[in-house]
Length: 453
Image (tube, rainbow, N blue to C red; front, side, top):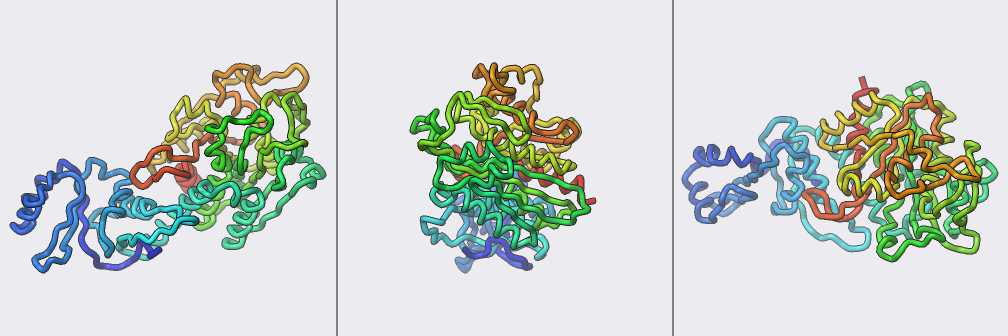
C-alpha cells in the first residue's frame, strides 16, 4: 500500500469545517466555487470536491459536526480520490486528522487482495509523520492479530510475533513450552492448553533499561476457545479467534512503548493456549494447585481465561513492578454492563485509575472504571478448594472474575485489569467490523505522562 502519510509543503487543500461554520466560509468563496456548490446541490453536510476552471481538483471541503473527533477522517480517506491533500488547521487538528486518516484506510488483506488506491495526507514535518505512524501501526497490530484466523494464530505464532517485535527493538524473549510449564510450575497454563496439539506456552518479553521503573503487561492469549468440555454453542464459538485479544492489546501497546522509547523497563507476559477438547482435556470438578499455591476448583471449563492469567499474574508479582496492567477478552458480563465499545477496567490503585481515565478522555479512548467489590469474592468460594473459577450466580460476572484475578496479585503492587471486547460489531468511521484495540491509547498516554518527564 502507498504510504498514507507523507511530509511536504503542498497538496490539494482540504478544509474541514464544523456545520456551524459552513455559511460563513461559503460567503467568503468566489463565484465559481459557490456556483459549483449550488449546481451540485451541496447542502453543507459531508464532502464536496470542487474543480478548478481547468477541470482539475482545486480543493475539497468536508463539513461535519465532529470536527474535534479523533475519527474525523475515518471515512474521508475512503471517499477522496487518489492524490495528495493537505489540511489547513492547528497542529492538534492536523494530528487527530492524521490519526484517523491512517486508520481509516485499514484493511485486513492477508487473504483478500486490496487494490484500492488511497489518497495521501501531507503533513508539515517528517516528525509528525513518524509519530502518527507509530500509533497507527500499534493499533493495526492489534487489529491484524485479532483478525487472523486461529489456524494461523496459535500459541507458536504468537511466540513468533513477540520474537520479531523484540528483535526489532532490541528486546529479549523467552518461551516456556509444553510440559516444561509443569517443570517450572505454571500448572494452570498447562492444564488449559494441554488438550491441543498446539503446545501451550508462556511468552516473556523484556526490554529497556534495567534500572528504569518496571512496568509489566499481561495479556490473555487464548488463541481459540471452544469452551473445552463445557462446549460453546456454534454461535458462541464463531468469533473465538478473538479470544487472544488481550495478548494482541499488550503486544500493540508494547510496540508503541518501544517505538517511542519510553524510559521504563518493560516486561510483557502472554500465557498462550488453545482451549481444545480431547481425551486429556481438563474437566468440570477438577482441582488445580496454581503457581501461587492457591487451589482452584474448575466450575466451568469455559472460564479458562482467568486460569491462564492467574499463573502469569503470580509470576509478574515476583518482580514487584511499579505498575502491572493486564488485558483480557474475559467476560460477557462486561459487554452486558457497558456494551461492546466501552472497555471496563478494575484497579486497586485509585490514583492510577483516575489518571488513566483522564488520559482516556485526553486522547478520546474512553475507559470506564468498575468496582472491585470485595464481598463478591465469597461468590467464588468452593467447598473443596480455596477458590472456584466461576461465581455461583450469573450476576456480577465481570466483578467476580476481576476479584479472582486480584487474589493472585501481591497486595503491595499497583494493578489494573482491562476486560475488553476486542471486536467492532458495527462499522464506524475509521473502525471497520473486526478486530479492534480498546484502551491502549489511554494507557500509553498515561504511561507517557507519568514516566516520560
